[in-house]
Length: 332
Image 1 (cartoon, rainbow, N blue to C red):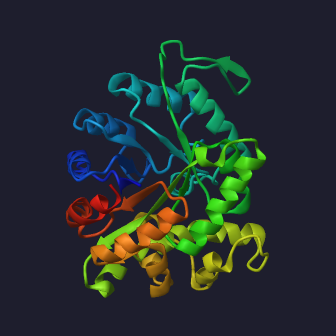
Image 2 (tube, rainbow, N blue to C red; image 1 turned 180 degrees about the horizontal axis):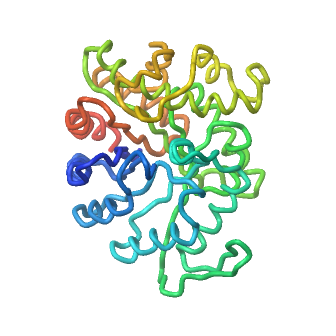
């Protein structure tokens, strides 16, 4: 199992670079960041510094979207980083939650997302692609490689990930829901004539190592609110009891009343007071290192290839070090 670290690109950028360097020293192989141009600093600028100051780490957004940048710009940016640092990027992509809504736009449609996955990958790897009716190719790309991993929750999005994406990003660490969603992705891959094992499975969630569970829950409760934004979209689309989405995912948002993106992804987010302890425990990894190892082994048995640690809490360095000392060696 691989391990990744997920950060917001809050200033100063040097702090993000330093934490990623620390993560690489502790055995993390992937460095991810949020991508919302209004809320945080521009991640692709910071990726160049992370890549410059690490040796093996692969970097990318968790996640970008097809709406805030034109697709040829996204592809060219990835291709430039790969040309400079040797194919050490991955494109995490989704419909767009905070990035689109903060800018007053709706998340992208799945049709647009599916088209963007193909175009961005083709252009970044040096192939022709049709962009808004115009045939384009980036002529200077040589031996470029860009895996595109898609974030998804709902049945149609999971099917799209299985058909088109190189990897699937699931932003929660509940074993029951992980099993359900991984099966949906792999079934769609098989129906599309792909080898299901070719789709990399990445689970991303907050991890907090320590004995004080009450404090850990308060530091990670924001995550249930972030996931709740996507769940609210699913309920609006499919209904609360449609059977299309497990009630184990949807039931907890009944008391949700709006969301303030100015606190997005941050401990103490006041928009997440509806999230019960049970959801924090199910969606996140909390407790001593041994509890993390036990849950991660269960996830690995379900086919998870990478666990990416959301480190938006008051113990970022401690969690990175604890994972390097105790957790990652257990999966060597």
